[in-house]
Length: 162
Image 1: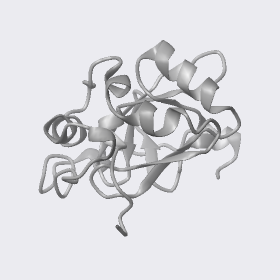
Image 2 (image 1 turned 180 degrees about the horizontal axis):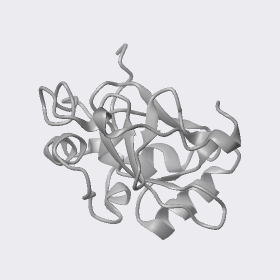
Image 3 (image 1 turned 90 degrees about the vertical axis):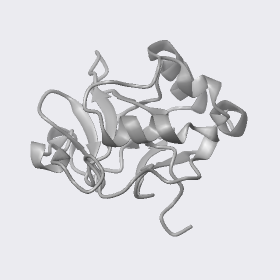
């Protein structure tokens, strides 16, 4: 992982240039985890730069049922287009802390140590994206540092080898 001083890892606008399917080379996977809506995911991931799923959407999926009980077992969140790992949480905090912060803000909220920087970039202006052009959400720093407010539909993919 890059040093704290080098975070977030920045990218440039070329990452989000038009491709075969919006800002990505292909649509989202058809079997997204947590019963996330495929059409909503495709719109947010590939044809959007500013908007988000509704606040609290992630709590209406099966995410909490599937992972909220497994108190401190980290969950890997995969790109809904490519299946590459983007976030692993919780790291450096409890699942309860991760869920509380996410509930307070309305979207899954990740910290620097939970980001898979090999696959994630921040653009000038705060947009968080995958290196493959998937819109993820935004970096909205608070007093504790960078906080990545991420659409669950953008990180509900299955691992690329499955």
